[in-house]
Length: 288
Ligand SMILES: [Zn+2]
Image (cartoon, rainbow, N blue to C red; front, side, top):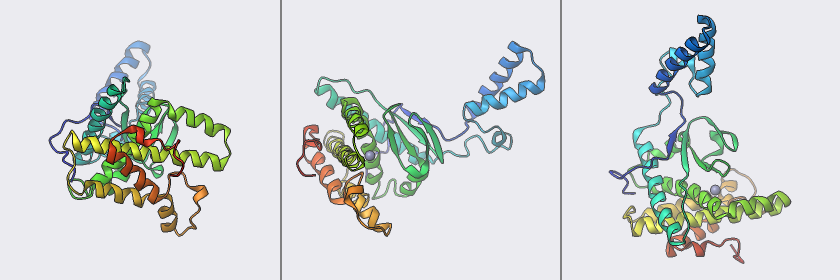
């Protein structure tokens, strides 16, 4: 079990799951501004408010029916767990970057439900958690997390921490410049080469998740016996070969974009054992 309770959370979590009471105050402000500055009639002002609310992400009709404020919020334990894990990644990566003479710029983490407008375009919850290099935000749909959230505070919660640490690993790749270099190479490449490069990106993010777990355990006392086993188990469940097999499809390695189960386990373990980012050179590795 991850020892996350009672720890400080991150200030970088943003809740994008619909209206909150504060938005109602904002709505009143918009109403007053519109009425006083433009002096337009009641109906026109109301229309402007409707548009204004929609722009800031509030569903006005849901607000009127009383369902808008807070209705879509996740449960407090899930939110606090995510916040604490993000904070623990900030602390560990902040230190590792500092040791390398670099500055770690912390990513934002957006919680969403259903779908979200990101710097990388609109994403539905179906895509799962992802990192957007363009705005440097991690996006976590809480529908996906509610699946795992039943296990928060119970054996199995490290799998959820691993998912966050993997996405933060993509942020590290953005800061080191490898993400931009790979994207440029992918733009020139054919499909097979594009996929092969993507596999190396994903396995490096897995390795970085392992590096984080190493220091989170060693210097932060965050982890318990058995947590790493859970992480390895999670990594093996989301390998491309396993996912294809479970979906009843033929296993086609050339279509892999994340690596096989064995590869994901291998690279997470490699990062975890040494805690050294230098051991995460999936691009220089002869075999994965
Ligand atoms: Zn990834």
